[in-house]
Image 1 (tube, one colour):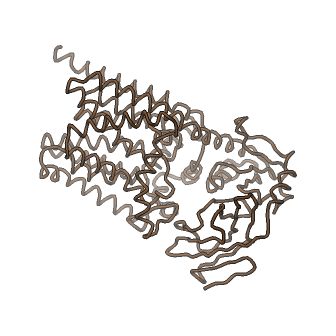
Image 2 (cartoon, rainbow, N blue to C red; image 1 turned 90 degrees about the vertical axis):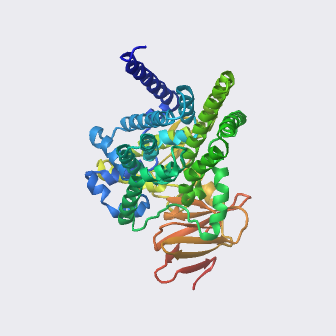
Image 3 (cartoon, rainbow, N blue to C red; image 1 turned 30 degrees about the vertical axis):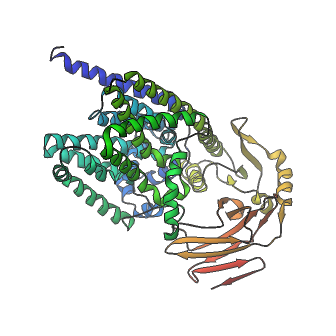
Length: 553
């Protein structure tokens, strides 16, 4: 091959890899292109509605309410919104392109150490994982994929700067690293992984990481200025006494999020274990330490939200497993066991696809349900109600804003999450709609309204119930009773919102003045509700309520 032909060959190989990864995204995740808005998409639309990106980025109130700092996600979302308007299909096309880009960037980074085949296997395996379902179907987690693109390219530039002992690639790496952090805080620990990479000596690596230290300082300063704290966290509280248990359960939670509950899980686990074991056998103690560090660094940022672990949180741990598997396949091939490496790679890929398909059934069904509910709600009129939407309560509020205030459509349609609403407001509902899984759409069930109201309201008893509530540093805590078994919920707005909760728990960044009801469902099926319990923690940090009385202390 002549020197003139070599660049063409490389370009052809690169285009082939890009086409293969893009095709894999289409086959595995193309279903996302048929979705409408779901989850918290409406929040981002509201935030960016008729606002410039700088105005949205400088809206410290919005950031502090969500306790997140992901400015480049807003830039990405706003680019779609201003270029194409409210066309979700375009947003999902961008989402799928970002996922393909993440796989390609992972491939480019792994090519520093692996041959093409092993790097490609690792990148394809990443796309076949269960966490990538969330990365494709939820628009407001796009920052994971776009952040991975930046983090992988930052890693490549850093390694090149160390190998060539040049400063310019290190500064480029630091800039990409800053971008990855501004996409999502889960990429902050990347700098610790770069320290451990087996490249040159520790002194040279540390010298080339000086720009990355500048990037971390800039990120922390910006985050502190916007959030008022260098930390964050949202969702369920994690008290100091709970932290060891949360951390201990985290690896198992991450592992479960990679599986489907089918027999193919075992095929996938055996194949992955064999590949990772081959990598560790060849690399020895240093490789084992690097792999363990990668897993710890991937999971550490999700500890604050790990009480309600979601698939996407395991995404970076899955990247570490896929990379280690690629190293294992390459190690086998180098030792003359290419057929074994090929068989292992094929087994892992086939099993991962089948596991993903099985696990994705319920996940895609939920997304499609939210799409159908949202589109139906947009066409509802005053007095018409949507029953038990899968769209989160806060997102329903934003959907109503988009419908009524943003787009000027008919006002007065409502929704509710608990059928207590039927008992408390029997005359407000002109028509009742709910999602029917068999019909794959929202159906009119007004004809059964009276029957459903009678059934549900007849199950409610006047039974003992209690709650102890407290408010500490902006967080809301509760202890419900007196029953040890059964299911408790906290209900707002006569059933408009309902959250199933543990007997003892807490939620971050809650208002200090509000009203709620306690809902209890017994193992036998009967229900009891408290009356409205007004809570004003400005007067007292601890409030106790019991059936028939209420005391404060």
